[in-house]
Image 1: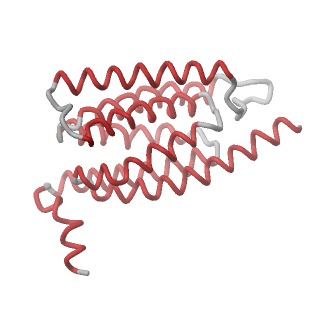
Image 2: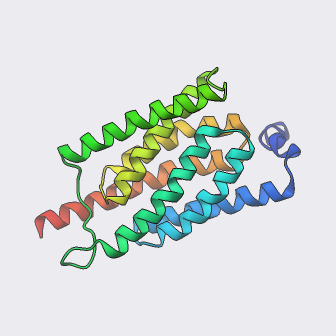
Length: 209
C-alpha cells in the first residue's frame, strides 16, 4: 500500500509547495464550477475562471502547450459564457437548455477540426509531437473546445464531450505528473454523467411544456 502511495506522490517530491497549493485550489474550484453547471447556475463561469487561470499557468510552466491552449480558451469562453448566460435571455428571462440541431453539429465539427489542426501546428512548432500522449492531447483539445462552445450555448450534448474528454484525460494527467488533477478527472467523468441526465430532463420538460 505504501508503495502505491509513493508512486502516486512521487511527482510532487519535485514540486514546490506553491505549485501544489495552486493545483489543489484549481481542483477544488473546478469541482465547484461543475456543480454550478449541473444546476444551470451562472456561477459556473466566475468560479471556473479561477481554475482555468491557475491551470493556464501550471500547464505553461510545465511545457504542456496543448493543455495551456485548452485552459486559455476555457478562460476566454468562460467570459463569453458568463455574459451569454446573464444577458442573452429569452422571454422566460434565461437561455433555455436545448438539444443540438444540424447547424449546431456543423459548427461544432468545424471547431473540432480547426482546433485539432491548430494544436498540431503548435506541437510541431515546439518539437513536441513525438509521442502517443501528444496526439491524445491534441484530440482532447478538440473535444474540450467543442464541449465548452456547446456549454456556452446551453446544449445538452456538451456533457458528452466532457465525459469523453475527461475519460481520456485521466491516464494522461497521471502520466504528466498531475496526480490531483488525474483524480479530479475521475470525479469529473461521474459529474458529467450526472450533468447530462439533469440537462436532458430539463430540455425534455421544456419541449413538453
